[in-house]
Each structure stands twice: as C-alpha cells, then as structure tokens.
Image 1: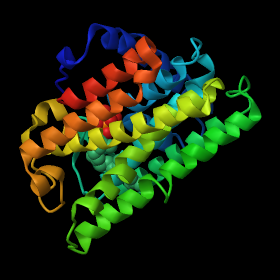
Image 2 (image 1 turned 180 degrees about the vertical axis):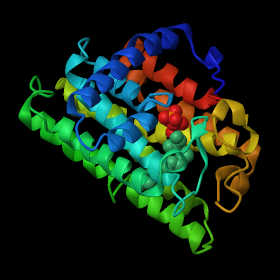
Image 3 (image 1 turned 180 degrees about the horizontal axis):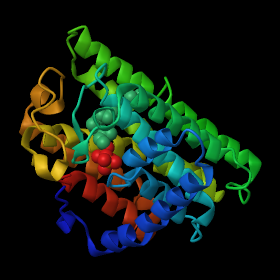
Length: 306
Ligand code: GRG
C-alpha cells in the first residue's frame, strides 16, 4: 500500500512519528496480555488491528488531550479503545451482508482471509474489548472515576445506535431499499457513520485531561463536527478520483450508494471540503498556537490521498 507523506506538515509528521509507535506498542502489549484460548480469534483481531491503518482516531484522542495536558500516558487506553471500535466497524462494514468488500488497507478483508463467522466474532471481540479496557481499573487508574464514566458514555453513544451504528443503518438501508438520498439525508449518514467516532475521539481526549472548561469543550465539539464531515466528504471525493494503490481498496466502488460528488458534483464537493476545513480551524482559533496540531490534522484530512 502506497502512502504519501507529502500531505503532512513537518510538525504533524513528527506528531505521527512520535505517537503512532506509542499507541501501537500499547495495543500490542494489551493484546498479548489478554490472549488465551481460542487463539484464532485473537489472531484475526490482530490481523485487522495491525494492518497499517492511519491511526487517525487515536491521534485525535492524543491531540484533544494535549491541548490541556502534556502527559498522554493515562489516555492510551482511550486511544486504543477508539482504534478497536474503528477496526471492528471496518471488519463488519466489509462483510457480504454490508459492503461485501475483498480488500481493506491493501490486504484481503478479514472474512476473505479467515471466514465470515470469524470476521463477525473478531469484530464483536474488538468492540467489547474497547469497553473492557475503558473500564479496567488497572489501565485507567490515573483517571477520576466520574471523568472515566463520562468518557465511556460518550464513546458508547458515539459508536452505538445514536452514532456510528445509526449512520450505518441509514446508509445500508438506503442502498438495499434503493431509497432516494437527498443532501440532508447524506449529511445525516456521514455525520453519524463516520463523524460520530471522530468527534468522540477529539472530545474524549479533551474530557479525559480533566482540565477543559465547558467553553473549550464547545469549541472543540464544533471543530470535531466539521472535521468528521470533512473526512467523509474527502472519502467520497477519493472514491471518484483516488488512486486505488494508495487507498488500499478499489475506487468507483460506491456506484449504487449516494456520495457527495454524485449529488452535488466534484467541484462543489471540493468547495464543501474547503468550507468545512475553514469552519473547523475557526472553531479552534480560541486556542491560539496550542491548536496547531488540530489545524494540521484537519489539513491532512482535507489533502489526504489514502
Ligand atoms: C459496521 C457498525 C458499522 C459501522 C461501519 C465506519 C463505517 C461504519 C464504515 C466504513 C465505511 C467507510 C469506508 C467509510 C469511509 C470513511 C472511513 C471510516 C474510512 C476508513 O477510515 P480510515 O481512512 O481508515 O481512517 P484506516 O484504514 O486508515 O484506519
């Protein structure tokens, strides 16, 4: 899978280089520590977890926290939980009952590599593992119990029926039932299916720092809402003009699904992405220079090619 680092500012590049290995080794150690019988399901979970994802959600947790606090050690379980949930969603999204995809992150999808039943169960395993790690006193002992509970509630709502699952249902239903999807509906799908988890990542990092004021959380929420939608609008654009080798999956794939370029055109989709980028950056202007990584992450999401 071809990855283009040119989309990153030097500061973001060092941020990725510093924190991706930290998150990955935390996840590896955690997976090692819980492994038991039956081994194949752990292997299947690890196959997808360590397939070379961008780790955007863990990095957003870290960026949200670092706005208020230098020490990110105590939020590594949250960063990992977000990646567990994200990976489960991709595994299930690829299943024959949903998108029926053969390739993900440049490799065979989990149900192609193993089997459909193992992909369903490995996804279920990862989802539950997220909440196991978030409620594990040994992993989360440094965090105030009330803050921990607020974080768990936010992540469960965002990944559940009021967030990602709700968006996925609307998306799959509109495709399978051949429903007409207009702009408000498409926005609903994208904000829930993709945006909810992205928002939860930024917000849970900030909440977990225990130092963000209500006004600061409001500003971040606006940033994260715009970033979440931006991410998916760019994904839709890449589905039309992206390089399959860089993306690790085929393009022109969502031929029956409604996506932004098909609904409003490619140019208008690009303009929408720029507008969302501007809105996201404006929302965090109150943080001054401290928001540099958040702005860079947003810029990366707008210009990404993978
Ligand atoms: C199955 C409940 C359930 C939900 C699935 C997120 C999702 C909902 C489906 C994924 C479909 C998809 C490809 C959406 C486009 C946006 C997206 C989430 C892309 C993948 O995220 P990246 O680009 O992936 O961050 P990597 O591989 O880098 O981790």
